[in-house]
Image 1 (cartoon, helix red, strand yellow):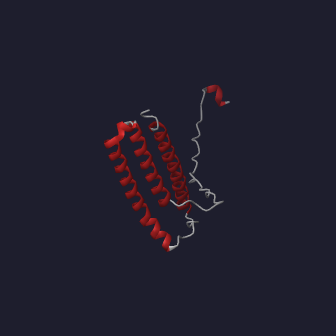
Image 2: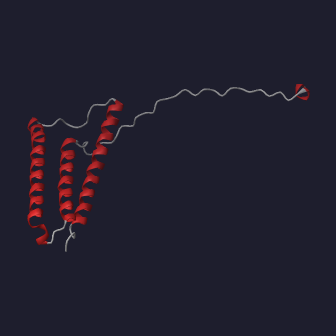
Image 3: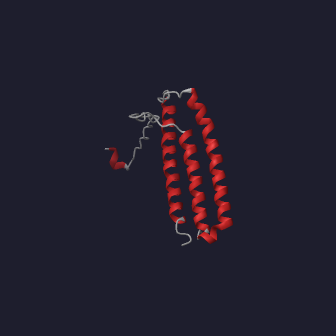
Length: 145
């Protein structure tokens, strides 16, 4: 029964990281498009109390996740083999905690755009087209006529 839950936990952790990364990439692309177009940020400003909560809560949650990871590791060292828990199970649980920490950090750090917002169309720089050089071909005395 060892290493039974570890692989699914690793898969769930990878999925959480993937969705968090895709959300972060989408928000950063929208921010770059807004900056390139010279438009103001369409997101309403946060209330000051929410700014404080957003700054204080993630480090507290990270501390709690680290403490939980240490407790899981200690439980594995003390009684892991006797309970039928393998090393892969421990690694899967720790990776799930780490993935949740990454998701939480990116979720609080990157605010999404408002509902119904679309990216502005950024015009590509216009380059001047140079005319091709005119080439004249002389074929000899019969072409002079």
